[in-house]
Image 1 (tube, rainbow, N blue to C red):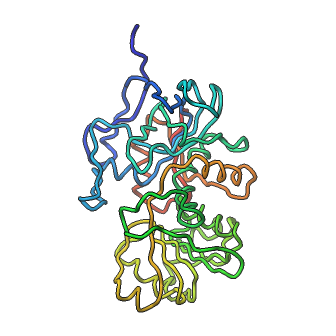
Image 2 (cartoon, one colour; image 1 turned 180 degrees about the vertical axis):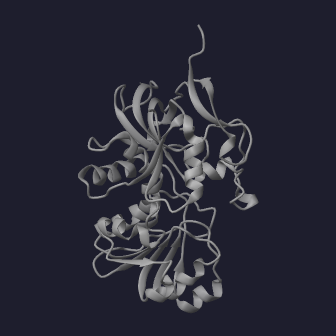
Image 3 (spheres, rainbow, N blue to C red; image 1 turned 180 degrees about the horizontal axis):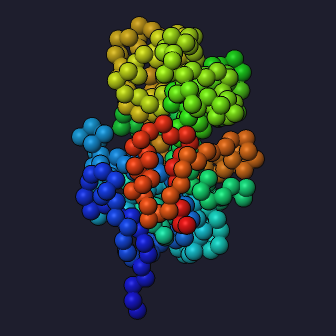
Length: 336
């Protein structure tokens, strides 16, 4: 019997968007605990281009071992085609979405079909199309696990202590840096859902978008230094990181916390002197948490925004769009 094939995007070497190849590969067979999903849309996330570039963004001792060729991609939305014998809760024809095998880099979502761990999936919200569902998992679960509930006991590779979210509610003030991006715009909405006062930091063009999502204040960093505009904050969710991330320490009240989603540079002595906490974590696949997020998406309590979409075959263009920055929401690949 001939091998069943599909189209997928694969990397045979590392580099820029030009290394993404659209080619024929075998359709995967679901192993125990997995379902075969006919992919309808895929979310494009920073780990996708980190993988494409050879993981150079990470410290050498933390880089996972990758075997080439590899199919990138973690976020997926689609329709269940078949299930392994031991899988319950999903059946052929079910519409599902999920973040696959993260923090690993073997999600293999940039494809027409993917074998997905059932534990990483949730039923797709009925009120959400596949493109918006595929845009939600990595960004949404990152915001959820940083802000609301870690949801696991795995040790962090980035710090010795367990990450603990700050209780949010009326009377707490949260600043979100990079608020228009994937994690930022969902984190903003989750903080508002919990009743917090939210200060959103982004370039000025995103102001109307962020106010529409519920931001109480918007700081245009191209005009105003956010560390001068905000004071006595309970929490900073910094989705940008980098060598200037320490500037947000001065915006916090004593007892406040700074959560860097991406690597930042901080002086432990300054952190201690200011009486604040710096804590990070690594997002992990979690089907039950995704189902909770899905209920918020289904009711419109939380909305996911799409910056742009491209057919799977044009994944290179999607990565080129990501490289230009100033993304509003998420980039997605579709089966169209």
